[in-house]
Image (cartoon, rainbow, N blue to C red; front, side):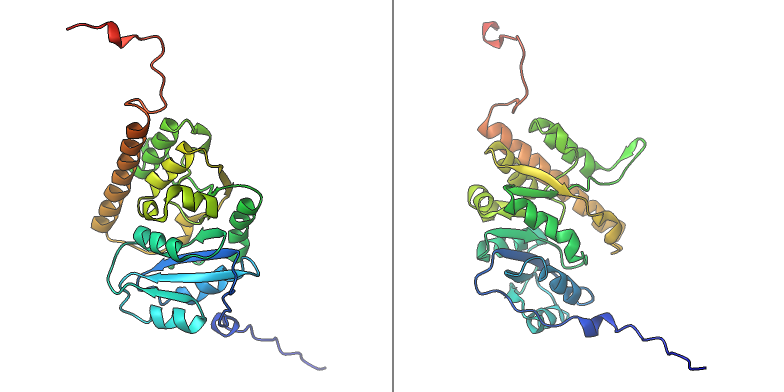
Length: 266
C-alpha cells in the first residue's frame, strides 16, 4: 500500500511577493503606519490586489522598527515623515500625493483581505463619492461608547439618520477624486469634519460593505491611551459640529418650527 504524504502549506510570508505599483493608477491605497512590522507586509499585499491598476502609498509616522524597510522592499511608495504626526494627518499627506481617481484608506495594523476592500472601490466606480464601512461600533444595553454616540449624533445633525454610526473615522473607506477635491486633502486630518463637509456639500455618501474592524483590531492599548484616543475622536466630532453651524446657522439643519424669535423684546 502506497502512502501519500500530505503537502505542507506554504508559509504566508513565502506567498507574499513584492508588488508592482501601476504607473497610471485608477486606485491609490493610502496606509498610514507607525511600527507595524508584523502586519505591513500582508497589508500591502492585500491592498495591491484591489484593482489591476493600483498604487500603494505607505505614510510612515515616525516608525523606529523595520516597517519602512519592509514597505520599500515590497514596492510601495514610501513617504517617510520621520516623526509622529498621527494616522489622520498621515492620511491627509497620502491623499495629497495620490494619483488615482479612487483613494482607498486602510490602516497598517489591520490585515483586511482584498475581497473585503474591493466593494469600496467598486462603489466609487459606480458613482459613490464616499464609500463607508457599515461597521457602527459596539453597542450593548445602556453602555454605549462615547465615540459611537458622537457618530450617531453627528449623523442626526446632518439629517442622515439612515447612516447610523457610520463614519469616516472607520476604515476601510474610499473617496472619489471629486470628493477629495471638494473636501480638500488637508481636512482629512479631522475625519468627522471631512465627513460633515462631504454631506453638507452634497456628495454621494453611501455605506457599502461591512468589515468588523472592532474584532480585527487585536492590538491591546493601555487604558490611559484608550481614554486619550476617545477624547480626541469626540473632540473631532465637536469640531465637525462647529464647522456645520458656522456654515449653516446655530441649529445646523434642525428646524425651529413655528417659533418667531424676532418678536421678542427685552
